[in-house]
Length: 505
Ligand code: XIL
Image (cartoon, rainbow, N blue to C red; front, top):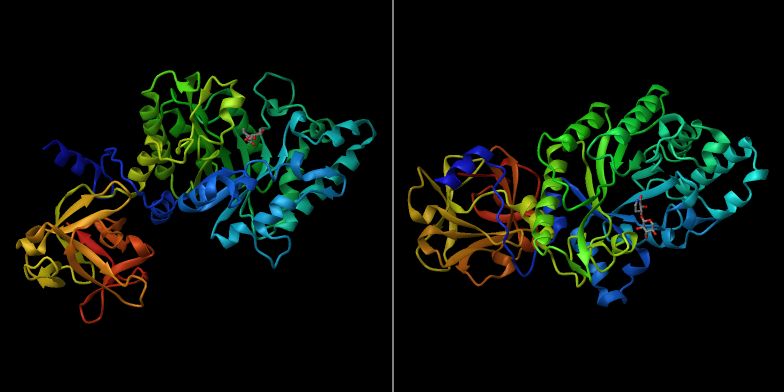
């Protein structure tokens, strides 16, 4: 009764969470792709080398994410060695050094966020620039800023879809500068206008790139967020090209996020300004003592917190194109050192690359679109028919039946497997399951077969509208279960035709 009530309340596309653990998750990338969300993580370029941790760092990035942001390799302090002297080795390895060459990013079907053109306070401005401050005129400073942005953005023009133009501009402390911005070399030379220049130069260097402002401690509104709103209103009033705001979301596990709260209200205020919004650096720190959580329950709590922030991102879609975490495994995270080892274990994979509750919660939230139960499956192209099995054998063929479909061979026991996929068992032969054959052939076929837990028996389901779903085989998840022109049930490439959509009811 209770679960039926939840089902009704949440509608057909969303389900109540239950944490289930499975050996072999399909990967967050698959589930996020099917939801139209980009999941990303900050990476350290040298760890992507195949010899690091037996390739586990690399393979977990490729398995779970469509988007990366280099954690420091695109920062001025790393790239800008002197006037006209640049270190592009890591960025070139990622993206290719020239317009016609590719790098790891394109070769792995990834996208990349650039972070950051200006990191707005002196500690993060290249030392050589500060050392020469006395001899640099404002005019020279503007030329330096222009040259830097043109050189970096121009080199990767068309390859970096999003840039953090300015990072962490607003100071956490009261001061007399406009918008309470941080003091910095750029401010001292050019005043607040340097912020405008940076966006304008970036836009000139790559007119297609989406230009962001990125900051921390603003997710819940408040004094600092208000200064960011003021800054954005000013930039917009000056017609400066700014397209989005990155909210870093470095938070503690005690911070809770619920629909309608200050986090949601703050996101809405950005969106009301016609800006895209990204969660750019999520990590959720847990209080630690002697390298262990002070409260072991915090690992579960953290899972729910990750889920709640993913829900927030999904709620504001399509204004929220991506969610990125700052790292992805507790093996490599900036949190312990940055907090003097009082906080840690902030990411979804543990230090041995094993999924934590945070990972399972996100997997479940993204992919679990239906509750377990008995369902009929009708192609949207032929809604008065439904899928059934022909015969009682454990290896029966499948076909469409016309009518009310009240027979047990025309109804399916749908089971969430916890790994991002589902099993479909005919009610009349529950020990068997829908099984795909030759999934990569131009036309794959489908029968039932004894349930042996093979990936050919696992299916990804995604919601395409009210009670309408797309069903794909795990081993070829971009393809779909479909009805062909002669009403055979097949696996084919996805075209979003009604023959490829299923009413699950
Ligand atoms: C951090 C990196 O993770 C560290 O390795 C580096 O020492 C300092 O910077 N906000 C940001 C990121 O915008 O650039 C920071 O990254 C984390 C906080």
